[in-house]
Image (cartoon, rainbow, N blue to C red; front, side, top):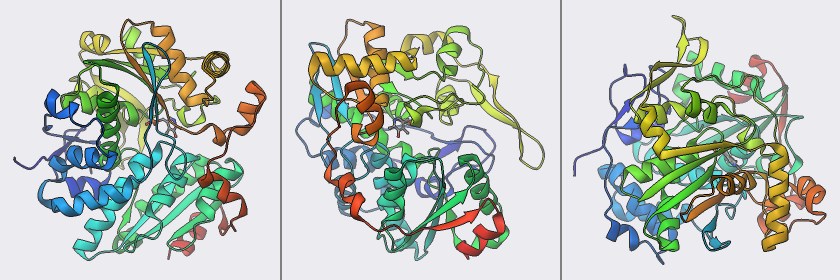
Length: 450
Ligand SMILES: *Cc1c(COP(=O)(O)O)cnc(C)c1O
């Protein structure tokens, strides 16, 4: 098999290899990397994933992309280190299943992408004899998953920036109690301030020799691992075709599923489940794309996204072109402009999308608890609510992306019970925190980084 190269959705930059796409993150023309070709897995091969350890399935899916950049036995070992936790699928009733992606070390599905990306990046950095600095801004779950995934990896130093007042104590502790190669920086400001500081560091020539790398959701290295659980869930459920209901924010999760379908997984439809940030269902209905600005605050807070970063990839796959308008210096003038329309007819056949209100989200948490005795949290509830609304005659797999114990107040308010806290989260309470606090001031950040 020939090597898979990656091109940019903005059509200017030259194609690059897997490791280049991984280290660059974003293409120089500000586009997102897409594979020029995809491997195909036969129905028989996919069926064989049933009963196999999760890391072996990950190895099979990732192998053709990594090609000769990592020897097979090493890649298998990296997958094994990344996936050392269970990935259960549970039958809710005759046609609805729940796939639990909340059993990783930080109890969020961000672990799936972050852990394999971290292992692969560390391996490639060591092979190239370089050390890397990962700089990431977080509004919650991403920072914890990235910090944990890179913790103790010898070739990588991690700086996570978070808004001092905008995250929960458990979220903060997931970043501040690790120590070692993970440096947590609290910013007296908002999440947007943190992002702006990070962006500035990436554009600062003084950091060139520091090999700064981002770990954000547009990196193809974070996308690919998210195809794996679709294959695994399908094989375990054992039907001949399936519908997935995907709780969506930046559409990385959804895009992982769509790539899986392109690689041969018999997915009949995707239900794109969003909260009150309804730009996608409106687009699917009207063909007009308008980001929600500012994004709405909903209890499924990791999905409070008014302009999904991975939407450019989805539109690209359907023959369209979605991009930001920029001035000559590269500053964004207008976000999310459709330069070429995608094949809307095909998109409407492959996707249905529902915006789930905050009320519906709460009612669904209550309904699932009362009817099935299962505690779900707001993100998973959006996916189940959308599956119920879709009312399809197919087997539907809903995705639970976080553990209820990350939202104890909400669960207490709706169900009047305390969610069970997994060991990984409970352990945080006793651990000591270490972090530096800075003002929203680039010079202060620079001092810390240097
Ligand atoms: C990030 C996140 C999502 C949204 O996933 P996207 O890939 O951004 O669509 C959903 N649920 C949880 C718990 C998350 O952390």
